[in-house]
Picture 1 (cartoon, one colour):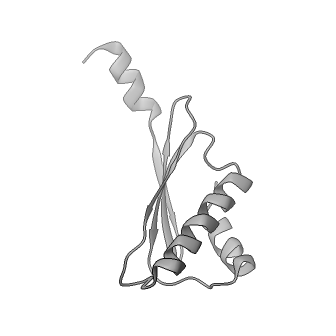
Picture 2: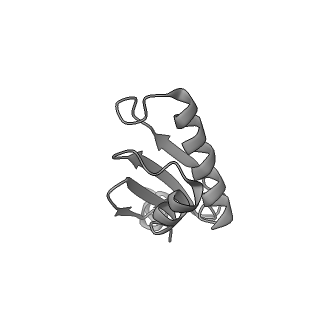
Length: 97
């Protein structure tokens, strides 16, 4: 394995945070801006309107907290979160680094 690849694998670390509603996996990136990856199950969020609203809210919260600076964020929804933005932000914000 070349030296550059060894350094690359050492710098890419991940950590997991979760609560009753979400599971977030943060994967550290070297220097680039990260992006969110979301897994929204049809079993949990049945309507497309609700799924899209949750996606928008998550993206907005990540930008607000600058959580994508050095991380890719993988988000899994465990059960339906409150449909009030203030409560949603409070619950999801607890998971951010």
